[in-house]
Amino acid sequence: MGWTTPWVSSYDSDFNYDFHVSFKPEDIARGQVFYNYEVTSIPVEDLSGFSVFYKDENGDIFHAYGTFGRGAEYVMTAYVWVRPHDRYDVPGHSDPIGQFVAEESCCHDA
Image 1 (tube, rainbow, N blue to C red):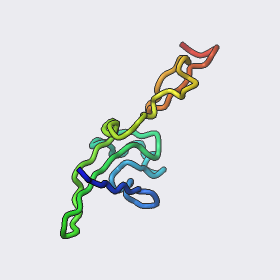
Image 2: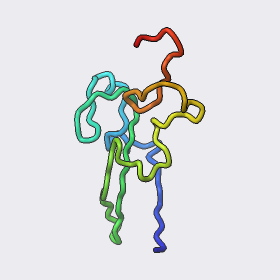
Image 3: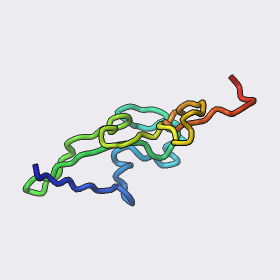
Image 4: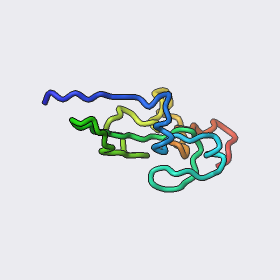
C-alpha cells in the first residue's frame, strides 16, 4: 500500500507518566496506582503500554488507539514470560510482572 509508519520513543519525557505506564517511587510506595483503566498495586516502575496517534492535515494530533497490559503482543516477537533459551527444562513460574522465576534445585518450600 506504500504506507510508512514513523515510530517514536517516549524516552526522556513525561509521556509514560502522563499515560500511566510509568510510576515514580513515591507512587509505588503509596501502594496504589492507576494502570490499565483501574486502580491497582504495581511492584515496578514501568509496565507495557502502546499508543497510536493520528496527525491530520491541519497538524492536529489525535490519540487514536491505546492498549495496556496484554494488548500489544501483535507487534512483539516475544513476550517477557518466555523462558530464556537455556531454561526451557527448568521448573519454575511467572512472577506478578511476568518474569520467569526458576524453582530452587533443592530445599525450597512446596
